[in-house]
Image 1 (cartoon, one colour):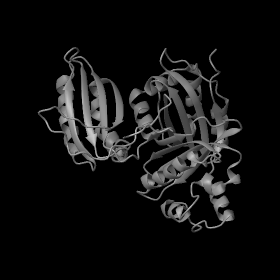
Image 2 (image 1 turned 180 degrees about the horizontal axis):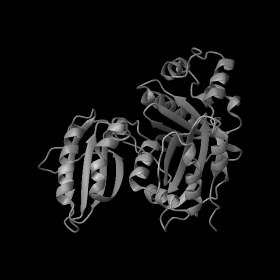
Image 3 (image 1 turned 90 degrees about the vertical axis):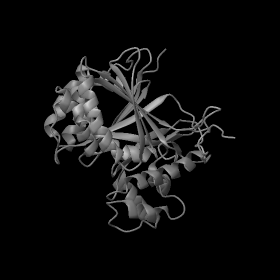
Image 4 (image 1 turned 135 degrees about the vertical axis):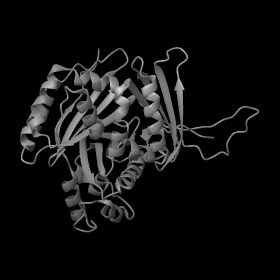
Length: 370
């Protein structure tokens, strides 16, 4: 019998099939245009590795509301496509006929049939995971070399927006890190992530900071233009592919860190999976200093955020993600920056760790509600 995991966790690496639900609200009179675009898009998606099927549905209550469901062999296959430049280009025509969208992703836990329809051949079901009501996401972008100090100062100094978005959605925590000229901003939201991101983007204090850093960005953007903003946030998306946290462990003296792992071409998913596997085991270890870990990955960019007791250097192999077995050798094969060979000693591992550690810029949590 399947039991519920006692850890707080989420993962794209369960090996289960993925069901994607896309809710769309069309502009009035745009149905024919939408159907033409959908046909072209459907044919493109059919050739994507890992894609199984699609269904298109129209609401019987509000004909402007449509639903697209798709099934994929696994979450990593879907994420590799949805975060690609080819996906950005292929969905561009949809923006002229779709007023609003919302995407939901689910692991397929069970498939059942009616008495007259036999159930499919059973496959091992993933273990249900215990959640904490928090949605995690990150954005990443690069700034012009030489502007890092100015950008860090701007990102550290902004006034925090109002945490309460609506009765169901609240900003839980925002952390910003830099590694060289790369910025990574992570957000944790109770409730609707999209509603929270829209809320933040509309705040005057946030708009002022975004405008101030625009001249320093390596890729131009105009957040006042919906098309430019949509393109920027799509390209900057750095999804959380794995999260795990200990339950009931003392959280005192826990500090937040982030590590940057530039993977070799095509190795991002394997690298993220390696780090996720270690941290699954680490939070179950009673004496482990790791309280929680979140792995973010897009293509060959991997960021691992740790909530950890004590300094990283106290257990450098654990902090880097290579404690035990031959994980250091595997990590070196996957990293694009591993030019010094395989870290085999504590000194070498510490050097790798120092090179991977990101500079913390700000870490903010709203005040506890009374």
